[in-house]
Length: 523
Image (cartoon, rainbow, N blue to C red):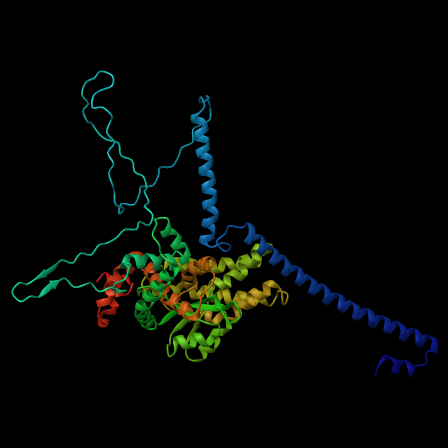
């Protein structure tokens, strides 16, 4: 029974009943307005919090210099500019002091750190500087050598173009009237202009140093060597074709691993039909450094970001896959592949929150995650069995405590707040995040593959876009080989030169010996 009905059945005067009804309606309206005000305040608070975080993030991106803000390449660009300015000022100061009489100063002279010795493996050229006279400038007597002062300078000789002349003497037999000459060595481009070293220079410049072909043409022009871009492009296409079997073999070896990393980065591809570019993706796969196997990074160029590309690449592969939270991987985990969660991504949620407003709760989460990483640092040089034992003994209890803390803290924070979202991210992915601690070779994060992708992401600013899907696939194969060479501490230039010299006559049954894997090349 509502209030109006109760009043109608009462003996109160009509005027009193009307006043009570009016007052009740007023209180109801005020209650609805209060609820609306509370809702509006909550929405505005969340909006302010989100804007504060975004503003703090943009400020860090603009002015910050922390590891979570700038990549090593970006920091290098900033720091090298500062170093160059300091060197210029010091040179100017030295020149000014040389042209003026030194003034007496009570300041303590600046003690400079000793210069690091130049690497011992670099070739040395001795330049002996003898005095103008072998007699003493004071008394005229002959000088006797009692020692020598040696200083070293770093000398760089830019790309030097030269010509190799292949002379094949021809011999005749007077008896049977036959001619004999040494055979023409097999080459990637039979009868072609470039040597294997020249081809390697082009490929490393383009795919490691990310120099477009027109810049290589200009470098050659400075030495008065005409190299048309179309010629350079044809060399790239030919070398790419010869190297494809090596990339395919690396793919087979990679899929023999039980733990892999995966990530992807967008690239622009020319779309001639529309006169503009479209977005394609370069997918990257890496074996984990904890496996003890020779490191392999493999790139797969595809026209989109669909998870089907990952499923096609891995096909019937079964194992543990370390990925971020991108939804394209989810269908893969229904086929038997086991998901590993990335703690670096989970940490970043709390890091950004702490940087934005100094959240004590976020700091506590960072402290707990830091303890997990400290254990990984201790296990760095252990074998898989020892690492697994350490994780079971020390990491698993900390993970259990962390999960309890997340659940208790999450129940107390405001829904839809930035802190709640950071906590929910870890809670939702907890099974994948804590899975590494049950293994001795599973990684704690996806940083190894992200670090392998980063140089390509920086290089995209130079080459802008891939000319076609075929060009993208060729680039992926070449970057696979050169990237793997770098991971194995091999000089890409030296490895590729040697490989291009051997490829034309190398038997396919021994293809593994050509792969850029240190464990194989040292046998």
